[in-house]
Image (cartoon, rainbow, N blue to C red; front, side):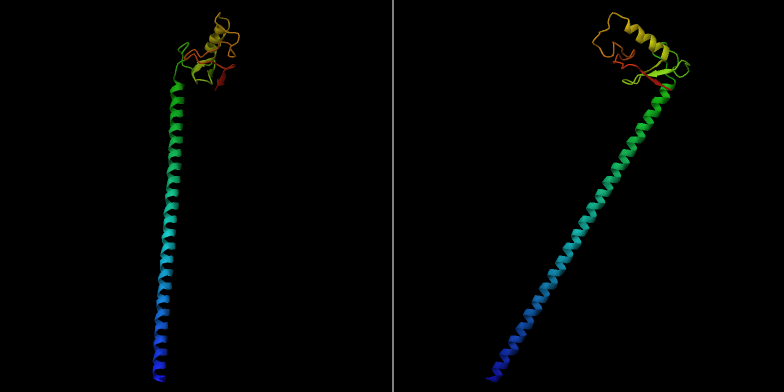
Length: 154
């Protein structure tokens, strides 16, 4: 009977070791799975941050390109205006020593004496509406309203 009791105890100890080994293996596998999941999360976060950084860089490059395009267009516009004639007298506005007036609403440029004559003519014409805040003043080229006084361009 003691022999049987000892066998039972040995069997019970063997089963307990196996149970503990299974639990340890399950714990190890669970920890490994958690580590893999954490690694995967970090990779996903890293990829998200990399995509965000690339998108920001692309947006920054796009904005720089737009700014450069605007700068070039403005430079081209200035260069073309340098040789553009006054639409009233047809003389080169940059060569005219009387000065140049650029209208703020539309950007058209005129010799100062020509624009002053134009606005004076409009002021004394019969077509002026007394309720008109611009007092009937319009751009001689596009007829958009001219706020008074027009700004001088140097």
